[in-house]
Length: 230
Image (cartoon, rainbow, N blue to C red):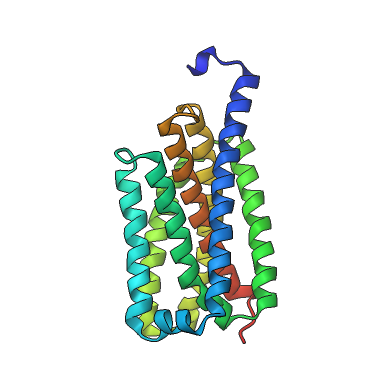
């Protein structure tokens, strides 16, 4: 298929597919932000989520379960179900991320969002246009991410300030790298799928999920650095 395409056709296909991925990602971010802002203005919702540790923990478990189930079963489900699960996940994430609006000032959350958007945009552009093969970054970044998760869990019990800041800056670097890597991977995937088909729509959703997770996690780690607590 690729051998029969001209360079202009390849660029058109890649641009069209990545635009759809970004559209789904931006919609998910908008839902997350809307739900988070609505949650902090509702005493009932705040009580349900943060009144007990179980409420917040249950949300986290459900969110992780959705991401794992969606990733493992994407090939057997319909594109509409994949879209529904992705948007449900973004809404639930808005509930849990509402805690950031309670901890940090609105001004610092807004400024950090724009810093994140600029950093994310720059790395995504790099991943899309670079001629360098970033596939070697995948295993390295994945191993670094596993180490980050383990260190974060350890520090929940250890409460070490030094480790906290190491985790924070490492987290920023990891998700900056993942943004470029995932963007290039999505670009390459665009030539293997018919974007109008079921598989193409599901591919766009999985690409949007990857970039959404990169953006949200980068935002959280940057907020640790630039955020002003209330």
